Length: 290
Image (cartoon, rainbow, N blue to C red):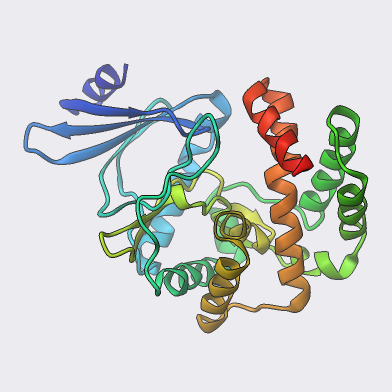
């Protein structure tokens, strides 16, 4: 299918590998007659197709502003995106059935500084400029209200330990924790290790998959690091962010931790219920009870 789609848009390529790990796109890694490597992305759902134009404008906006590479789409239609492969490899692609990261090396010492600088630059974007790009825009309380709804649904449909539920309820009702969430920023919102490219030495070279980018809670750009790298990784990333001009308050750090725990358990479970993904539901339940 990807070969036919590519030919329809003037690309004559040979697909080398199909990557089914993405939740939103089917991805093909290909080569053309000149030996140039390409990445092909075909959206899995109509709602993903509807986000493509906003993502294209966002990439054009951030490309000259970031010190790392982002995709430069040469084909952009509702059915296919194609761009020349960026330098580097994903640090830790997410295995599609277990949701575990498949690490191929450790990040370099400056990885977290460089990623923190990328996040700080995104968060410096004027909200009005981001809105004009056509990406999704959340209200100041949207994520908080969604979190409360997810917890209520999970308590009805999953086994949620009362100690965890009580901690999350306290957090949801804590205005101090959520004060930063009302200061909406441009966020990538999916900076897990599979979307960060590194070279052979582990240095950050690029950022992939901007589909979830939005104007939203700035904490969303730190939750994946907390989940993937733990407390030490989060601390190093926040230090890099602060060094690059980002604002870090004690309440914000606590908020990131709780949001990370919640999204990779409760919100994962809610997604699995809504999408009919039994395997993901099992993973969410195990994490909740762990």
